[in-house]
Length: 473
Ligand code: ADP
Ligand code: ADP
Ligand code: MG
Image (cartoon, rainbow, N blue to C red; front, top):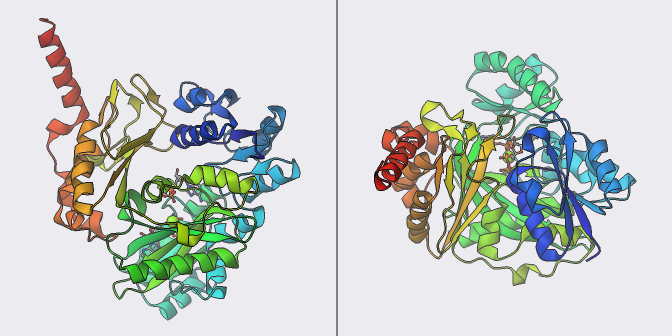
């Protein structure tokens, strides 16, 4: 292995995940943290750690500072994780200038695919169908209205550099388009530092199917099959499964090929994800490419047995892929539940605070990727996802039963989480039969009407009462 020491330019569970991969490869790792994160688990999982800012965000978002620290601490590589600067071409470029290997694609590939309108052009050039939409970015609201007429309502107005499900609005008619136009621009400017927007035809209740790809520096490109991320709320993924229970083998092969075509077209190297929408008539439309490791990479690891973070490090080291497409197979089904510190019954409002007790799930086919522990205080400055529960089983019905069991094993007291809501989803016939699309959450508001007995404060009270009773208090 050419790489000897990695700076992990991220926090939380993904930083822990990267530190674990480094450890298995015999590579040293360096963690960075803000003052608010001084007690975060990733700080302890790396071999060395350094505070990079007093405030919660500036350190994680300063590419020069991060690369300087990598050089000062003798790191020969940097892993950006997801979110923060992971899709920031400048960070990749600075790494290259300073002789630090960026564990990800080139700055050119990040800029080309991070811009959604440019990515659409790349897909078109590769002969891959894209959702019908505007030609490039919109000039002004009148241009938007004109192009929406051509495409036909409803349309999706989208921020060109958007991500994380933000900067997207559905517009059912001209009036809504006019109302949303300035809103999306202001959202995009605030969240992504770019005012550029475009529009696409809105596909009604599609399925979100994405393909994991790996490409090395020697021209080899493979896919690791697909993930179905259709269980979403407000365009944000909640539960992901792999492979999709809704694809035929033929569709699976087709979408894998399409993803490889897009990857080759942009000269992409390292791990990436090509996202598609699947319409009711079974057409696939390219949506975007994520030029980084994804939150849900774990389920692909479970079904293929390939460690994606290690593959990223090996590719960045210049090694050729250890497998060809024919060597890659998948087994069983896997699901990932994003355990968010949120209160589903209260509009999914973030529920930050101290975790008074935490028991992780275990048993066959269960994996937890988390960065928390009993006594940990979830800081209010970051994403509300505090753990990922990943479940594997041979068959779909077993996956559903095992997921239910694992979610009931997992206990987080002190904050609200999405766990009881996921139990409700698992009880729904559409999930049990593996037939769902992106309209599932909105179509089923009754799933939020679960009993208050499963809420954390009542469990914590019950546990405290049981302990007190045992102790004869
Ligand atoms: P995935 O595509 O891996 O499922 P998400 O969309 O859930 O990832 O995003 C993971 C994290 O990265 C979230 O914290 C999200 O807010 C952040 N993120 C994703 N894309 C962007 C972006 N373009 N700009 C800023 N943050 C982003
Ligand atoms: P992000 O960069 O935030 O991940 P995406 O372009 O991947 O944004 O879209 C996020 C989600 O929004 C999709 O998974 C899908 O549910 C919904 N979506 C996006 N574009 C469309 C569309 N044209 N029609 C219907 N749904 C869409
Ligand atoms: Mg996306």
